[in-house]
Image (cartoon, rainbow, N blue to C red; front, side, top):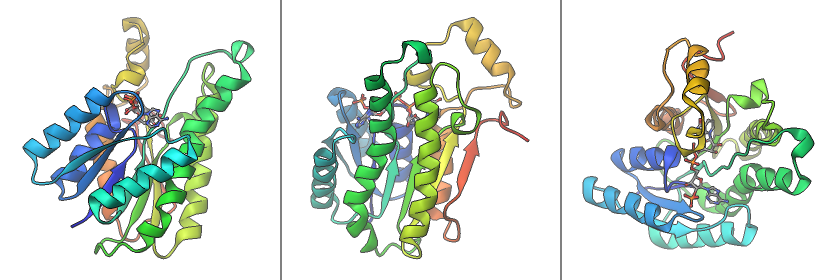
Length: 245
Ligand code: NAP
C-alpha cells in the first residue's frame, strides 16, 4: 500500500491534490494548521468516496518539531511515505514600505522553511519507498517566482526560493527521490478570493486561455510529476498561458 503526505490540504489546491492521490490509489495524510473542521471534512469525503484512507494531522510546517511529529504520525498511519507534496503556504499583500520584518520572516518561514522542515524529516522514509514509479517530492511554487509582485515581495521571494530548494534537492536526493515543482498562475481558492470584480477581470484578461485555474488543474500537474520517472529538478508552469514567452 502506498502513501502520500500533502501539506496544507484542508482546503484549496492541497485538498484537490489529496483527492487526486486518493483517486489514484494512495492513502493520504491531510495536514492543516488552523482549520480542523475543514481538514476532517476532506478526510471524511475521501474515506466515503474513494477506496483509499485519509488521516488528519495538525502541524505547523514552519516549526521543525511539528514537521517531525507530522512525519512520525504519518509513518504510523500510512506504514510508508512514498510521495510528499509541500503545498502549505501563506500570502500577504503589503507594500515594502509598510512591511514589518517579522511579517517578511513569517512568509519565508512557512513557504520555504516549511518545505525544508518537512522534506528533511521525511527523507529517510522516502528513501525506503518501494513504489514502482519511485518516491517523489513536489514543491508548490508560483508564477510570481518569475515575475515578482509589487505588493507581495516576500511571497515572490519565498516562491523563487522554493525553486532553488527544488533543484538543490533534486541533485542531493538523486537517483532515489525525484524532486520537482509546480508553479501555478491564478488559481481560484481562498488565497485569491480578495480580488474585486474589476481586479479579477483585469487579471483574467492577461490569461490567454481566458479563465482562472481550478485546484484540479494543479492536481493534474502534481500527478504527472509523481508518475514521470525521468523528470527531476523541473518546474511545471500551469497558468493558462500567462507566462508564455
Ligand atoms: P489556501 O486556500 O489559502 O490554503 C492554504 C493551505 O495551507 C490550508 O490548508 C492551510 O491550512 C495550510 N497552511 C497554511 N499555513 C500553514 C502552516 N504553517 N502549516 C501547515 N499548513 C498551513 O491556499 P491555496 O491557494 O490552496 O495555495 C496552496 C499553495 O499553492 C500555496 O503554497 C500557495 O502559495 C500556492 N499557490 C497558490 C496560487 C493561487 O492562485 N491560489 C498561485 C500560486 C501558488 P488551514 O486551513 O489550517 O489554515
